Amino acid sequence: GIQVEQSPPDLILQEGANSTLRCNFSDSVNNLQWFHQNPWGQLINLFYIPSGTKQNGRLSATTVATERYSLLYISSSQTTDSGVYFCAVGVMGSNFGNEKLTFGTGTRLTIIP
Amino acid sequence: ETGVTQTPRHLVMGMTNKKSLKCEQHLGHNAMYWYKQSAKKPLELMFVYSLEERVENNSVPSRFSPECPNSSHLFLHLHTLQPEDSALYLCASSQRDINEKLFFGSGTQLSVL
Image 1 (cartoon, chains in turn orange, green):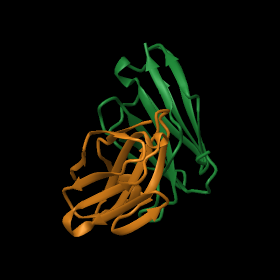
Image 2 (spheres, one colour; image 1 turned 60 degrees about the horizontal axis):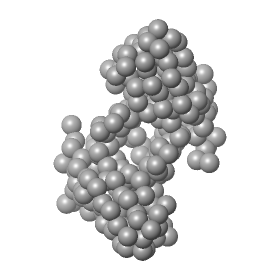
Image 3 (tube, helix red, strand yellow; image 1 turned 90 degrees about the horizontal axis):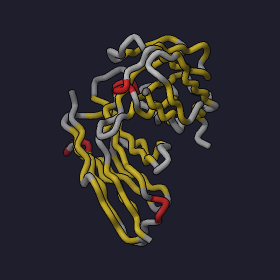
């Protein structure tokens, strides 16, 4: 099956700093989503981005499908950004949409006041 | 409020108990999912229901039994669980076109003694 690798595994930053999280995947995908899991376990969908660039406030994401990676940018970090960030991918050619999503192991982000 | 509600938030049960997890979505979606999140492991898809029909069952032991009475409600019935089944159980929903955003509930933290 498809392999999904996220880096770095852990990241500690001062409040106000910028960060870049990376998701590499081993096959062509037609579905890629970024999630934030807060310290209470809630998973929030940040982006659906199988290709291209999207922005939402201080967050933006870029997926370069031909090179099999996606980046999540967080600018002017706040303590509420702390948590684990997951990417999940679905393989090209699948008719099953979300049923075949494979999740990475996540990047744990800690923002220090 | 994410639109997907799970109860209970925490559950402690013995290996001989029978309990049920409940999920309700208020987003008008037509697909619902159960995921398992164990420490140090990626999210694992357990079951998928689309239009109240099960479309995916990822080799989950029979001690986990899902039920989807309608497109808004999903249950996971638990019986004779093992301590290794202790994990965070997450419900999600989406609109089942090919490739749509997945929305998660807050999860049930399950401990099996």
